[in-house]
Length: 166
Ligand code: DQA
Image (cartoon, protein in one colour):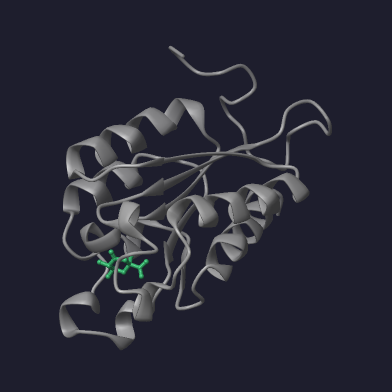
């Protein structure tokens, strides 16, 4: 799609007419999240990314949100996806994987997105190795959900819903 989708521009959530169009939420996943299920299951669990997306999709539907998702292994693609979301999504949920801890480019891209933004992690990075204790994204998102495993994907939809409809 080129240009803003109808009804997306200027969306505040509070101003959206009931039944007109469901708010669009984009769930973005970063590097190595495509390996969920195989990757360190003692930390990340046995569910695959598709399972988490399915869980988020069900929660989004129940909340009247429309969810789409994408996984990108490289930083540039993730930055581009955030840039594209400026015209195609009302809210963002991002599990950026390790990019969380050092990608200022991703932080800058997220700062250009005006809608609600939720940082999401399966594990609790602040309770792990020191290099995971810093999130360079924290200052540009509304909040972070971390440490709840797959439930976090559901919680993130609730957070976004509340932020879109204060
Ligand atoms: C993660 C935590 C990050 O520190 C790590 O690099 C990941 C996954 C999580 O969901 O717990 O890849 O974002």
